[in-house]
Length: 56
Image 1 (spheres, rainbow, N blue to C red):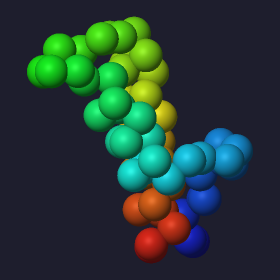
Image 2: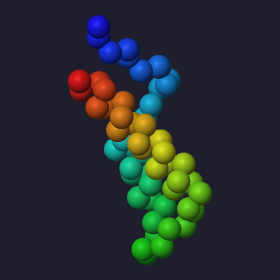
Image 3: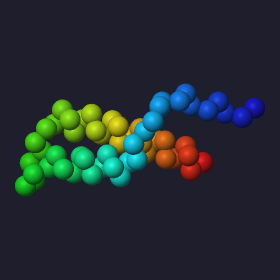
């Protein structure tokens, strides 16, 4: 029996777009908004997972 596809998680931004926003939070080697960085990190992980599933 084929594996069950994951539930639709809605639209996910591309990982490189999220990564660019994450990089912008670093100014002169200092993280300026740790809370937002954490949110973006979770979004980035979902984007990477989505791209792996799409590639498979």
